[in-house]
Image 1 (cartoon, rainbow, N blue to C red):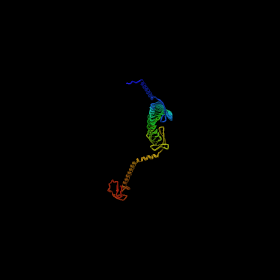
Image 2 (cartoon, rainbow, N blue to C red):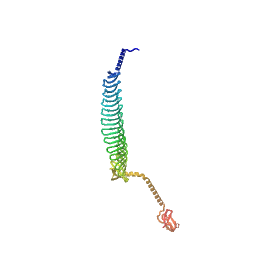
Image 3 (tube, one colour):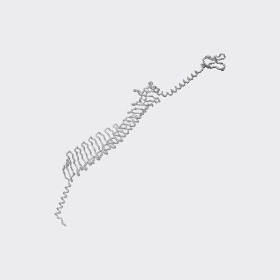
Image 4 (tube, rainbow, N blue to C red):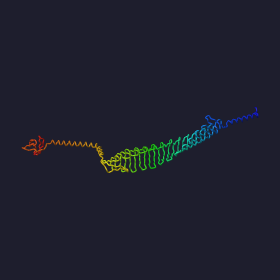
Length: 444
């Protein structure tokens, strides 16, 4: 076995030292300035041919990054300034915003909070260029989750968000004092909610497109209450309304007013049942007055127009409104003027005859009288027939003019001179019958 000499050991040691030195230099970081293909310039540390450590990238357009690099990517803390003036200060990971950071937009808006994959994710505060402010949850760059939004004009919302819109449960207050608490969808009041108006009136019910829509209850500060249907913020459908004076309406509504069929009650005891138009009695209906009188017929613009008025005692007047005057026509045809006031009617003492009413009455009665007229005519004809028959019978009887004359034991007719034997008649006979002149003669 050959032994290694001392000189050989010395040479081997020198080679090992040089090899270690060369290997150490290959892994060391060095400051380098590199012109990149896109025109950018890198000035900073490199390792293994990659940007690694502290460095700066700039270009002629004004873009600049200054911060940490790792394996050729932004990684760690850094500042990124864009050509348009936008700026990010915060944490990077794998070349993207990851962690906490602050981004200032070119229009003056600003976001400060958590990032993931270069998008706001987690908790953060977003201040808009116009002064609006959001403080809450973010997901994939959008306001999603719980948060508080304050607008520059004083509106304030606290509740659920989805894709940047109010969505879910929330409370929205306005500078004028109004307030909505309930469900939201795509930024609008949708579903069930509670709304307080600026004057203190309240609504509790269903909403659509930010307005009462569906069914709900409204209570005004003046004392009026409404419970029923809504459409686009106005009363519509079936509902019950009680005003501040205690008047009550139950029925159909449209465009925010009484329209259709309904019943209106008054505290004094009056009541109307029938058709409405634009909040007034209009069409066919019945009004019950506080003195127990009843009007049934047509109404126009809240007033009786043509119909029947029945008094407490059961007397029915025909009522008609003409040329600004009410005319009351009694069953006998007398016509009065009058009117309505304080929940009842009044009739003046002056009257005239309504001949048209009499004619109409006769015209109505005429068909009923025809059978009686026919019976009367038949009876009259029968009587005439019987009278004529009786007269004809009487005309056939012998006419009595003079008594028969007894002469020489014979009877002589004074009319025609006929002679009859007396012995042919009974001694107590009082008449003879002349067969020639057909006359019955008393025996003298």
